[in-house]
Image 1 (cartoon, rainbow, N blue to C red):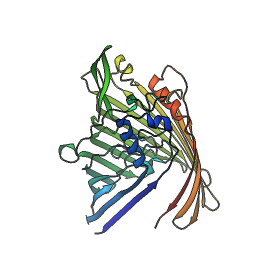
Image 2: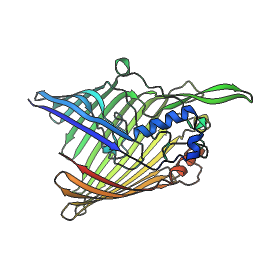
Image 3: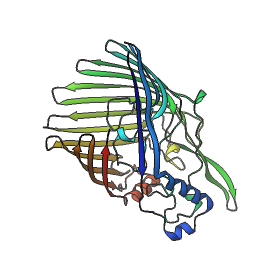
Image 4: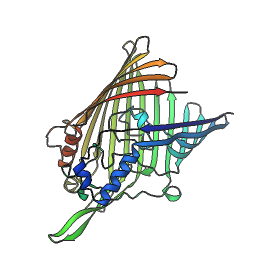
Length: 391
C-alpha cells in the first residue's frame, strides 16, 4: 500500500505585440472592448495544474482523486483516442501535445489483473480548450480589416454546469504483451469544439441568417489502438475511433465520424528518433448540404505530422523538429517548429527556436473560411525562448 500527493502549478506572464491599432481601439463597441479586456487579462495567469491524491489500497487497485491528466492511445500527436482532456490552442504549434493538455477534476480507479489494466474515470469538471481570444493575432476575425465591428465577435458560448448529469465518463481496457500492446476505449463526453447555432433575424433587407450561440455536443466514442514492436528499431501504432452525436445546421439528424491514425517511429539512429503520423477523419453518411454555408463541413480531413529528435553533447543538447500539415493538398496550411534546448544543470534547461506557419494553397478541398484563417495566421511566424526549472 502506498499514497502519493502531487501538485503542479503554472505561472504565465506574456506581453505580445498588440494587433489592435489606436484607431481600432477607439472604434471598439462596448461588447468588443469587454472581449478584448478578457483576452488581455488571460495573457497573465496563475493556474493550479495537476493536483491529486493517489493511493493503492490493494495490490490490484490504484485510486487517483483530484485535478489530473488522463492520457489515452498510442500516437504522440494525432491520436484519435485521447479525447478526455482539452488542449491549450492559444498559440498553435508552439508546444507538444503533452504540454498542451489541460487537467480536469476527476476520480479514477485502475484495476490490474496480470497483463490487463481496466481504468474507470469520472470527470466532474466541465472545461473546454483555451482558444485565441478577441485581440489575439490567432483569432479568426470574420472582418480582419475592421476590428471594431461587432461582427468580429463570436456568439456566446454555452458551457454546461459541472457535475451531476453533465459528468463525463471514460473506460479503458489495456493490455501489455511481449512485443505488442492493446487498448480498447469508450468515452461519453462533451465535444471540445463548439458548434455554432444559427437563426433567422429580420432586418430592413429581409430575413438574414445570423449566429445565435455556440454549444458543445454530447459525444460518445468507441475505439481501439494497437502498438507493435518491429525488430529492434521500429514501433508501429494504429488507432481507430467511431464518434457519435455530431449535429449541423439544417438537419435534425445525428452524425457519426470515423477517425483513423497510423504512426511509425524509428529509433535506429544514434541518440535520435524519427516519428511519422497520418490521420484521417471521415463524416459518415455525408450530405452535400453539410459542405455549404453556414456549416462548411469537410467530408474527409487529412492531417500529417513529422517529428525528429536528436540528442547531442553527451545528451545535454536536444534538437527538436516538428512539422504539421493540414489537408490533402496543404489547403488548410500547416506549421513547422525547430527548437534547441540545453540542460544547464540538474532540473534546469534553457532553449529557443522558431515557429513558422504555411498559408495553404487553393484546391477543390479548401473552403473559403479555412483559407481566410490560415492566410491570416501565416503572418504570425515567431522566434521563441524558453527556460524550465524543476524542483
